[in-house]
Image 1: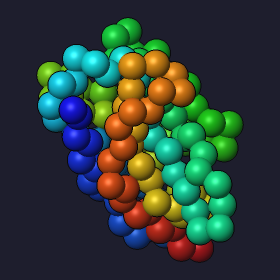
Image 2 (image 1 turned 45 degrees about the vertical axis):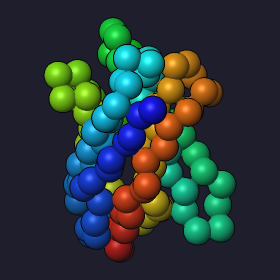
Image 3 (image 1 turned 60 degrees about the horizontal axis):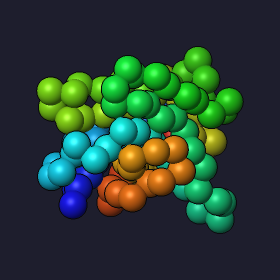
Length: 118
């Protein structure tokens, strides 16, 4: 089993920055991808960014390209999401996910709230 623990959410004004962290514990050898998703009230969950644990390849949603950066520290089994130039529409619960392949998100964190005020 793998446990994902997120941290770093909070409230910020538009234009500000936040950094989310997601630490993985347990049988992390089974993880090839880690990702961040978000879900705003009344909206469907959407993928924000993901990163391959080997090689570090990344992919971003169009809505966050150029503003968000996903990175990892393999020694700490931790993935980060640096969020800059935040907009009110970025307000959502952000979830970390991990799995063996794209679309196979076997593990989820508990979520961390990000609120951006105008």
